[in-house]
Length: 567
Ligand SMILES: [Cu+2]
Image (tube, rainbow, N blue to C red; front, side, top):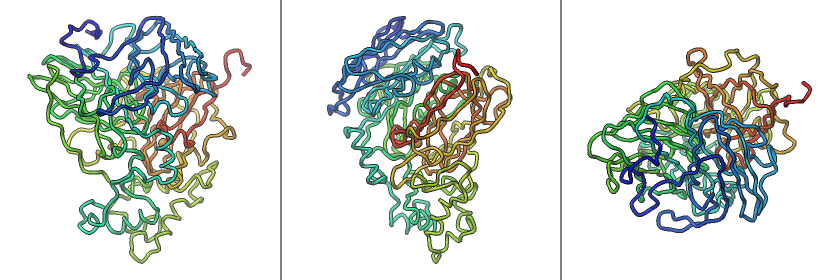
């Protein structure tokens, strides 16, 4: 059933007329990668990228479960580099995080990664040094299962989503540090206020104003500077994946963006989600799903007819889209839907539990927040009231908000999709296809707060930004623990743990909590996962919004004892 792309006749290959027809693919037991500078063409303009083997995205690495991988990485840059194999289970020395699991790869050096391949599914790889990932250093990984694939399909396409800016990422970060709203040009307007058109009431607006926040501040960096790409191609280039009518087509969708969360849909086609983060799930049919940074979703679609379909990956704040086409022939195109109305944050996104629009005007936290007469800094003050802080949180300059009433948002529609009139994937829809390995209930719960100061663009865990002074998070080897993430900020954070899969606590049937490597935690909400700490070593644990990670939302998870170490 599973078809290797090389088996396709020439006419059935994917690509855009006039550009590279197919993603370069590397496989076998001796893979060689070279990191270097390269020019890339985006929207007709040439930019400077950091690439692997000269392409953006980097070549597709195709492995088979049960093989041994040997991947040599040579650095031709004049700065250190590294490659992290995102979602792969491997010895921690091979995880590719400089300063944590290995020293990094110095200029003109080659590092050989060697590890057994003990899983299958859709993954990706990227630099973990500096901000090279944002400059083009990312690529897809597909691991074919050793046995029969439970997912039947006739053809597959890999879709790597990314965000490209001609601004250097350091320049973007500097602009954000100076003015976090720099790229947010969708601020609510006075005209909208008077007409009530944008759905934000006057009292709500006063409160947002008092917090120096804007309810339209949804992505820090967006379409004002980013061109959103599919397999390195901008919307106008129309990357096209081919199909024959009636085929079951597997789309392996990877969000390799630095800072962009997408809502994905294919007007006219239902999508059956069969895999999340490389792990098979019970098939669930939807019309749209959100893919946070670093997540992967595999979907099956069954296009029919002699017609084209548009794949729309709309940035969560509706400031732009990545676009591709599924068609029986190259050169076809379908209608491109316009960008939808900009979504607006709600009270729920401010950590005020169920107090949405209607309930917010009165007595939120005992303050009369809505009345025009109330001094608004009361509410802003309450939002960072240290009395709300849990034990162990540092309430310093790095914290400008503590959710007063965070609620579990695992069953909420993702941000921006609350009001769409079709089926949207929820985290609570995900059910592990096979029973999970560890049936033990967690022996303890660890609460980790995602914290930040929006105005200073500071981010951290439990009020602290990462530095050598921060204590690592310690787990006993093989201990079973529940980790509760509490988002005390008004931004979504895709939280990623290296070296492990965790089970989302999402109400799935016993033993079938879905396995993920990244969980997107909604603003003002909580998300919990159960973890079996079965991979000894030091592992990175961080927000996968690249600039949040760089601004401090990062820590080390230490699983001890190591082999040979006395317990
Ligand atoms: Cu973040």
